[in-house]
Amino acid sequence: MTVNLLSIADVMKSVGSVLVAVLILLAMVTVHEFGHYVAGKILHFKITEFSVGFGPAIFKKRSKKTGEIFALRVIPLGGYCAFDGEDYQEEDEEKSDKKAEPFEEMETEETQNDGGMVEVNEKPEEGYPEPVGERFDKQAPWKRIIVLVAGATMNYLFALILLFIMAACFGVPKCIVMPTDYKNDTTVEVPHAAWEEESLSQRDVLLRIEGDKVSMMTDIVDALRGKKAGENLSAEVLRKKDGEWLKKTVFIHVYADGVFADMGNADAVMAEIESCIGYDVYTTTMQSGFWDTVGGTFAYSWDMATAVLKTLGQLLTGQLGLEAVGGPVTTIGAISQATGSWFSFLYIASFIGVNLAVFNLLPIPALDGCKVIFCLIEWIRKKPVNRKVETLIHFIGIIFLFGFAILVDILQLF
Image (tube, one colour):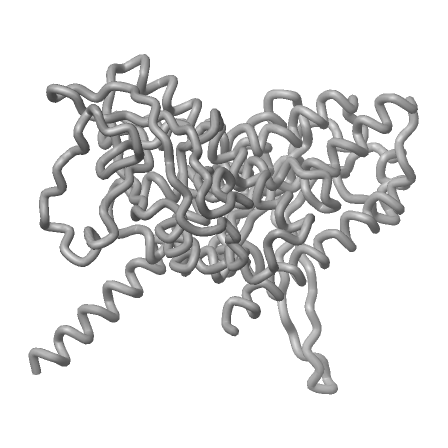
């Protein structure tokens, strides 16, 4: 009976972690779309719907004040803020030349005819105004660019807030080196290295390797990749002296070649770091004064963004395989495993926010970054790109992105 109760508790804990992961992802998507919405309202764009999720609507409400639809949909892996005239449709040109008709909510009523066939009859529900504002395609290019960039900007600002809360409560994340047997008994108190020691030693907090900043594990990998056994690398660390953390320059002896061929396996990466420097590396946190915390928050958010861009660059150059990345399902799984504490929750949520901000500004069809490029082309040419062509390009892009997300999720299973 006890075993069964423990099994149920483990299952419930796993389910709860997954739900938290879904909520984090959904919150970040909502923040992104809210950025578009706020910018659109300020610049007087005509917004028809604000939706969280995709697919059939679980909840749907039309505002009697603005005529805009607000919906919660069944698939919690995205969302959208729909602007009138954002995507090309055949009837757009005819609509733009006509005077707008009073907006009506259309209800459906099913009846059966004499042949037993179900007929759907539409009947208008009065009392809802037409959403106000200018069509997306009729707005100036610079206004459209602001609205498009606003989503990523909101993600980044929200991530900054979460990072500041994390840094204020727990401290800014740092990389600390510990003995290789520390993981087998984390209750053992590891003494600090002697200040006079010239080589990297236990409880040193890494700041720089060969002049390059170290703030996360990927920075250590970048510093060690390509290095040969027997080399000595210059490093700047924080080490305790008389109870105070002070900067010190030391050397890191490289015990094994830095290859890092299997970047998709976190355990393999950690093992290779250990074989290279003779120490395990853990994430610790260090608290400081208010202004140092503010500065550390901005610096760490930039480090996160840089790490995302480096990963994308390594994918394009072949340094990373597709198995090193994941789609929405893999992301939810990774988040659920990392939400074991408030620190982990804040860290992973802020990382997802920065990730969405960077990724959405990439010049990939269907993403905001590519739409910004089309606006810039129109701004320079004083003439828009053929809207049929642009819509087709974005449609192909979204099919590619969905296919890529499914592919990398499948690869994670093998």
